[in-house]
Image (cartoon, rainbow, N blue to C red):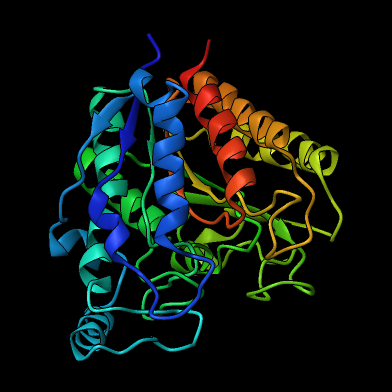
Length: 316
């Protein structure tokens, strides 16, 4: 049986902007309600996140950054370093719980209690680097999960697939010199979209040279262009790296209806991408996948895309 874990906590809704913002609690609440109403939630194993040990966070983030973030929230600051990185008094605590959600999914998959996991967490994480919050991100959930798997479960080769429409610059920077974590990102071309990183020639540094792979897409690219990139770029990289587990930075803002970019992926495109990674996981690492929610800001397209994603994780 293809057991899939589902990570969620209602406290994720407590991270809320003090002004109008596309990354809102409504998007996560809509996902949870939709998965319940269409029966997919009932087919998954509920996993409760906890607050991680600080040591699990410090494998990724600098202690001075954590203290800065905590202090800003206690003061009631409304932004961190830029206006799009919003804060409220709950944000530090909920960012920890979001990281704890990624860890809960990783723990369940690593121990075999589930084969795959979908972590419906927020705030998202892939723009956050060691010492800076960026975009809508405070702590890098996927990077924290990757380091947790390595430290707590002895997994030596982690493969991260980031299909959020914005380049996962924080994740790339964290693992740039690390040959044990492969980072693949497919995103709108940096000349056209935030954060302006993720060009083809960014391939890693020092001992990590060759374990970063970027597939920038021009505005207007859609399912066919993504299919070609997965077949021509992702598959050979996985065949060379031979991962022990996959992590997905699962942003759904490359959908053609999403207002924050100009890529034209459909819900069926997300079905293809999920099935493609699932087949690679079946071949190389016993099917083990931990998918962590990132972006997706138009509710209807977000729900249809998440639905196809979860259907594929569950399998037939």
